[in-house]
Image (tube, rainbow, N blue to C red; front, side):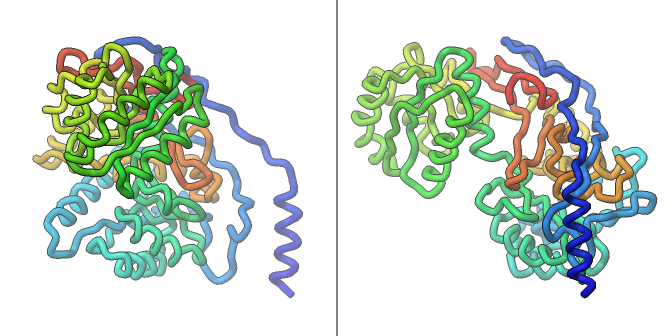
Length: 418
């Protein structure tokens, strides 16, 4: 009887209109070439929208309702506690960054508890269940996609949301969100900029691997949300000979498609150096076509020396904010942070901003996906209802072997770049 009455009452409540909230009033950064200037880091408090999600107040488990007058327990799942030194280092750095964020918060009490998963999905699920039994109201982590799926499934019936460090959008959805930098978000930033600059007819060149296929689909999806269009595609076998054999077909496709730009999925550890060398020799030159890449072309720095990539574009988080975080991390921990350690900070920043609103539904799905987003150490970001994310990225160009920002990262979701 009680569940039926409760369900009817809940439907009546959720049928009532609720006020929305607008975009932040702060305009985005101006466009144009600029070298980076270091800004001050600020974590903005934001409003949360009340939850009326089916199953949001399930019987038999904790809800997302929290008492913000007391310390709120947050579980951090990291891949430590195994014989893998790399995973142990990553676990240490994620925890250090998360604790930096906790120390930076004002007016918010977070009880951060760390659980080691060893990078194993089954162990991650077990630790997540233990964390919720211990009183965790939200889970930050784990890193790997299989672990994120296992954790999400384990705590779904307990009505606990998961902010995973993964960048694999296949695991996103339901109570699982991904904080990692995704292919689709990067592609959308670059394609949007290309369209604005009159270079929106794009030829797509990808490797014939599972990751290459994922990257290609991400670029194609991103194109549908911009003014750019994919006018031709060509892939190649993932080997040096495979690239050489495919060169005539790639060059022919680019020249005959009417493309203005060429978008590469390859990174510096793969076929990118070879493509950058051989395509200009096959009459696909940077002077005639805008080269752009899904990967970071400043990692490793030697990539910046490639002649074929001069004038090429790639996307990256706000360099000034990144340097600021890295300097603070070095000062506090005596070492360089792992490349994804900043996600530990961002997760706590988002949780803290929501808790600062003082609302009992601060960790609900609706609050997490608020349109105004959050401020992290790599710039603004927001979580989408489908579990993926959008991050404010800068567009950089390689000029004389150096990185020059030609389109600054937006500082809010109301400006250019989104």
